Image (cartoon, rainbow, N blue to C red; front, side, top):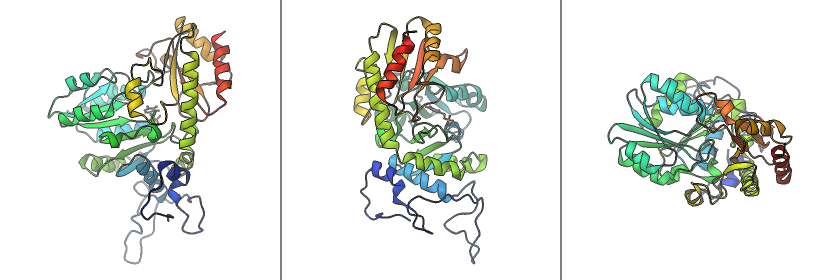
Length: 384
Ligand SMILES: *Cc1c(COP(=O)(O)O)cnc(C)c1O
C-alpha cells in the first residue's frame, strides 16, 4: 500500500528515503514487512492472489525493492538477482550462441573473466575494445550480427568514462543493444536509460545496499521486449534469485542511498585533490579531476558527483603500493566497494597474473567517515 501515489511527483531521494511510501497493509507499519513464504495459497477460484505462486518467481518483498529501483532508474521494470554476477551473466545468457558482442578491455574483473572463460565457451563472440573509446566501438560493431555493446562507466579500476548517449547511438545504428554496468555511478549520479541504454545492471552489493552485508544484483529495463522476456524466463529457470531477507535489507540500505553517495563523492573529490601532484604518487585516477581523460564526459553525464571510488598509483611500484595497503589504519585492506566504511585494495593481487591493472595501483572506496581522518591515514601510510 502506498501513500500519495496519485500523480506522483516525488523526487528520487524522497522515494528512496521513504521506500516509495509504502505502509504495511496489515499494521500500517512504516517499514514494509518481510514476506519469507516460499509458497502462496490459491483463492477459492484456484487463482493466484496478487500474482503470487512460488517465491523463485514472485515475492512481495522483491517487488517492493524492484519497484524502487525501477523508479530511481526511470525504467519500466527491474529484476533482482542473487549477485551482480548473476544479474550480468543472465543478461548475457539471454543472448544466443554465435552472437557478436563488444565489451571493454577494462571492466569489472570477474565479468571479464566470465566472458573469457564461460561466455566464449558457450558461444558468445566477444570483441574487446579500449574503455570509453566510442570510435573503437563504432569500428568493432558489425551491423546485423552485433547483438550487444556492454559498457561500464566509470569502469573498474581506472575509472574511464564512456559517453552513454554516444555508445547507444553507435550500438543502435548497428542494430545492437547497449547494456551499462552502472554499479559505480548508481542512479544518484547517472541514469543510463534516459540516455538511450537498453539495460542497466548493478552489483547492488556495492553502493545500492551500502553496508557490505548483502550480496545482490539487479537489472533494469526501459521496456518489455524479447530480451527482457528471456532474462525474466532465465531468472525463473536458472533460479539465481535473491532471498526475501536480502531484498528487504537492500530496500533498507537504499533509504540512505542519496546521503551516502553524496558524502562518498564529496570525500573522494577532496582526497583526489589533496593527493594530486603528491611526489609519493605517480598518478591519482579520478574522473572529478580535470586532468582525468574522462573528465569532460563525466561532467556532462554525471550529476551531483564523480563517484565514491578512486585509484592511486604509488611511486616505487608493487612493493611500495603493498606497503601502503599494509600501513593504513582507518582504510580497511579489503576488496569490494560502496560501503559506509572506506576500503583500500591492491587490485593486481586480487586479480592474479592475467590482470591488466598496473601493479602500483591501489583502489580506494571512500566511505562516510570523517574526510580528515581518511587523508591523515593515507598520508601516514604513504610516509612509511
Ligand atoms: C562487484 C561488481 C560486480 C559483481 O557484483 P557481485 O555482486 O560481486 O556479484 C560487477 N560489476 C561491478 C562494477 C562491480 O563492482
